[in-house]
Image 1 (cartoon, helix red, strand yellow):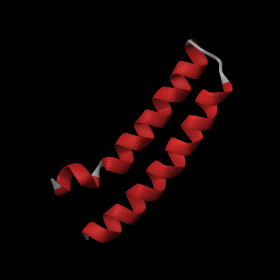
Image 2 (cartoon, rainbow, N blue to C red):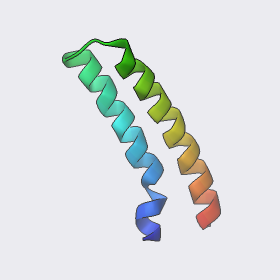
Image 3 (cartoon, one colour):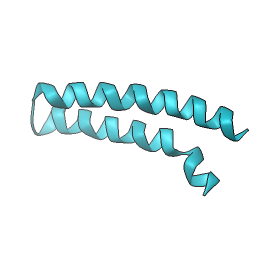
Image 4 (cartoon, helix red, strand yellow):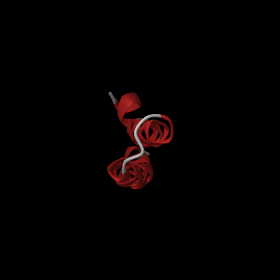
Length: 55
């Protein structure tokens, strides 16, 4: 379970990237940009803090 928790931040970052790809190629809506930046920031912060807590 710790190995999956270790990569939770990266998974959240990838969800943000998926939002940006959907924005670029399918639906150019502003809520996709807002949700992608929120996911990117949360993913980076969770990656940093979870890896500090595990190690």
